[in-house]
Structures are given as structure tokens and as C-alpha cells.
Image (cartoon, rainbow, N blue to C red; front, side):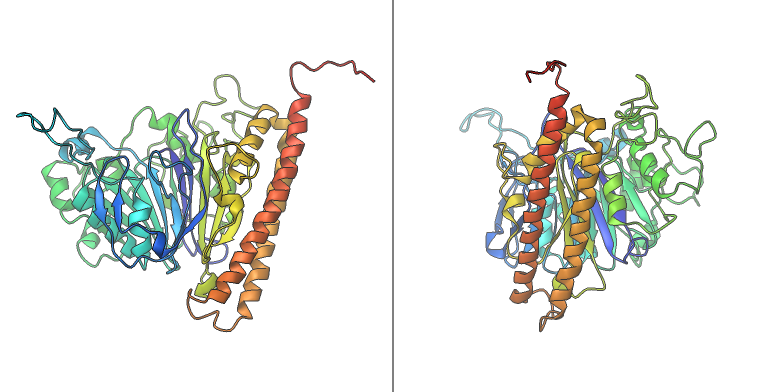
Length: 508
């Protein structure tokens, strides 16, 4: 699944929160309608069945409540995408990443094997399930973990036991830490703690570029990995370091450096870091330190200023604004426009930004910011995660196009705005700023209301707090619907005036 991930350490964010965010994009040529829901413990399966790999797994009997953003249509499984559980631990899964032939030869991916022949025949071979993948990860991990580190450990044990049929990157966060995990072949994995003062950019390419194996097999302060990773690297000659003293580089050992990376992946990391560190180095021209096709763009770095929610939304909506590569821009030409794969693309399905705020009590600490559809034309909206249900406007998505659903309204707006970009840009920007401002106002007012409640600072199991948060979410959704309907009306009019069968003479 093509996506883009941005992770913000607590000392790099504007308010001291840990922030994990990811666009979930459909494959080329399709959309996947999404819903924002709350999964109660009695709704969580105890016996899980994967649609894609046909694997069956028994799950623990003590799940926690958690949010998720599953597919509205389950023909390919749940694909729960991202969420927060009642322990205020968040997870985003997954960023599809790349690998190379050496890794796949040493540890093949674990896909399902169909049955061969007929039952009872002498040469009959029964079907063999495959491993676990993006369809499954959130559902089988998030309800059972109490820290980001514990999330890595649980998923790591499942990967070692069942294997996986794809390469993926997974983010875990709690109020103190963010961990980034990458699968390596069918059964191996690595994970690294995001430095508190740094951000991470991940564009569908194996990203970690420095890994301390001694720490992973020692104190495990900032690094974790599968139990036999050292032997796996040595036995298969995967370490490409020229000098033995050089730090181990997983990107060189496990990743890819293909021509398609330079069109599809590296330009996105270049653009994000160009925005967040504009003065630290030269980004454009013949003297650029890094270009859109550079293979050595850092996995993480310190920003030049603290990063806001709005910065994340801008970057995960971006289409190379201010460069010749912007498909909507005027500075490029037929050769440069659309040369590189944008982040804000037509097949964005949903964006979840999960903010865990250390300065608020556990009862209202977690906020999941949501947007649907193409991010260039939508708004990022906050919703409290510690609730018993989510607003219908975000939860009632079906396969039928309807303006009763935010998902389909956002899809309609994007299709209209794309055809009339210049004429609708101002209306979209006003909408994004207005909805965003109302979101911050709602958070401040609701935090204040929660602070006045007795017992609001004693965990996440206060039903009175959850009722307040749920009411705030509903009010936010109601306002969002009004503003979205208004925007749809505006852009429909603007796009209609540009239709090719218009005529300059009028009937009156």
C-alpha cells in the first residue's frame, strides 16, 4: 500500500507531544473508502482470520478499547490503519517499504499457497496459509500493548512466528517515545527509537540508515531486532560497510536503490526535509547537498524550528509547491510537472495524525486528527480518542457515494477542485484554515471542561469524561459537515462555470 509517514519526537513538536502521522493511499487505479470507528472490547475478535493470507490466530482475551480507521468494504479485510488504545498507546500500520534480492533470497516472504489437486487424490497438497501483513497488524497488536516498546515486541514475536508476505514499516508511540519498526524479509525485523529532538520522513522505502547492533543485543535502549539478526546478516553477507568500524546501515543492507525509487520515493523525503530544514543545506540547483534523487537523504534529523500539526498537514498534502515539479504550478514545463510522485495525491484515502499530549490527564491525552480523500483539498480535523463511539459523519462510510459521509464529500470536492485548481484554491485554503481553527478552539474548550470534572485525572475509565469528549467530537463533526457542504457548493459552482460547453451569450 503506497503511503507517506512523518514522525515527530516530543522535543521537536510545538507542544511537547509525540506525533505520528501517515497518509494511507490506495494502489494505482482504485480507492478504498474508510471509516473512523471505536472498537470496544466485546467487538474485538478472539479468533482472527486474515482475508488475504487465510491465516488464523487466537488472540488474548483481554483487549482494550481502541480507535481505528478500517476499510468500509471488507472484501480485502479490515485494514484498521491507525488508532489509539485506552492505555494511550498509538499505532500506525503500515508504510509499504522496499527491499532487495539478497534479502528475499535469504528470507523469502511468506505468501499463502493454494491447494493443489483434489482432496483424496494421491498427489493432493492442502493449502498453506501465508503470514501476517498490513491488513492484520493493528487489529492483532494495538488492543494488547501498554507502551510503544511493547508494541514492537508483540509484533516482532508475531512476525518471527508467522512471517509476513510483504515489506512494511510500522510506527508505535506513547507519551514518551516513538518507535519505528521495519520488516526484513519474511521473518526478520528491526526497530529504532525516534530521537526526541528529531523528526523522521518515510516515503515507501526502507528508511533506517544507522543501527546499533550492540545496543539491540545489549541494553536495548534505542534499538530492537529479531533474535537472530546478527547471524542472518553475517551468514548472508548483507553488511555492506567498507570498514568494520562503520555503523551498520540497514538501508544499504536491506533496502533498495532502484531507478523507480528516484521517481517514487526519494523526492518525497527531499521535499519534506527541504521544508523543515530550509537553511541547513542547499536543496536546489547544481550545488544542492541533496536532490530529489539522492539515496542518502537522512532517515531523521533535527528541525530548524518546532513542528506543528499544520506543518504535518501541509507536508502530507504537498504536491511539490514552489518547485518545477508541481503538477498545478506555473514554473515547470511538460517535462518537469508530474515528474515525481507527489505526497498529496488523488488516491490518498485517509490521513491519521495521532497526538499524545503530556500536559493533559490520561483521560483526554490522545487526539486523533483525521482527514479523508485527496489531502490537497481536505481539512485535518481533531477528535478525542478516549470515547465509546465516533461521529456518524466519519463512521458511516459505505461503498455508495453520498454527501452524508465525509469520505465521499471529500472525494467529490477533490475531483471538482482538480479540474479548476486556480479558481477553487482560495476557497479550499479558507476552509482548511477555518476548520483547523475551530478544531483548536474545540480542544481548548473541551480540555477546560474536562479539568473541572471530578476524577478526570485518574486514568481513562471515567465514563463522565468520555461523554464530554464524545459530545465535543459530535459538535466538531456537525460543524465539519456544515463547512464541508458549503465548500462543496462553492467549488461545484466554480468548476461548473469552467465547463467546455459553456457559451458567452446568455438567455436574459
